[in-house]
Image (tube, rainbow, N blue to C red; front, top):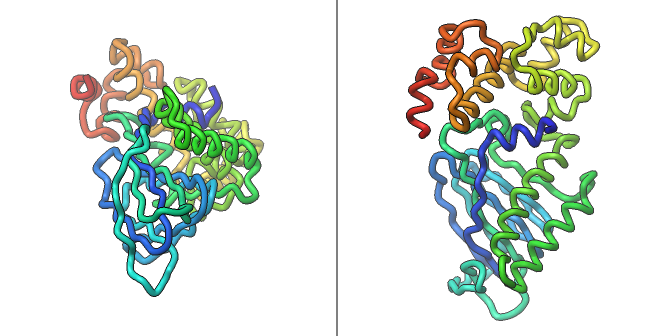
Length: 304
C-alpha cells in the first residue's frame, strides 16, 4: 500500500453526506463549529460561491472545488453581493438528501455538504498537518480530468437519484478527498506537513521504508542515506518540510501503527511493541502513554 493510502486508512474516516444546496442570488448559510472528530467538507458541483471564516478570511469556490476544514472551524457559505438581503431558504428533499433552495430558476451554485467522522482512537497524523482550510482546485492539477470525472459522477447521482445513489455518492466523496490530497502534493499549501514530505521524492523514499518496516532501527543516519543526503542536511530539511523532527515523526508513526493494531487486532501488547520497533514492553508502554495519555492496555479497553 502506498504512503497516502496507508495514512488515510489509519485515519479511520467514515463519510456522511448531509445536505445539498441549490442556491441563487444573495444567501448566507451558517455552519457552527463541528464536534470533536467531525471534519466538514463541501464539493461544488456547479456554479460558484464563497466561504467566509470568523477571522474574515474569504475562500472563493467554483465548480469542481473540494474544501475541507480539518479542525471543524465555524464558517459561512455566502452568495454574490447584491443590494437586496438574503432570500428566504426553504428545505425540501430530492430523494437522496435534504435540499436547501431559495429560488425557482437555475441555481448560482449547486453544493454538496458533508463531513468525515474520524474513528475514536484513530490516527490524526495526516489531518493534523493539513491547514485549517484545505482547498483543492482543479485548475492546474495533474489529476484534473479524474477529479472532473468524480465531480461529474457526483452531480449525476445527485440529479438522477437512482437506487444506491447515496452509497455511490458517499464513496466518491472519500475518493475525492484522496484525489484532492494527491493533487495538492505538488501544490503550495503554505504550510509544512506530511503532504510536502510525500511530494518530495527523497523524503518519500525514506517514509515508505519506515512505514513498511517500523521495527527497524531508523536512525537519522540511515534515513539520510536512503535519501542521498547528509545527516545534517536531512535533519534540517525534514524539519523545514514537515514541521516535525525526524525522531518525533518516527515515534508518532510507530504509535499510530500501534494504536491501529491495538484497536483492530487481539495481539498482545508485547507483540505489538516488537512489531513497531521496541525491544521491551516497558519502553513501548512509556512511549505510548507519552503520546496517547494512557497505557496501551487501557487504550485498547477504551476503544473496544
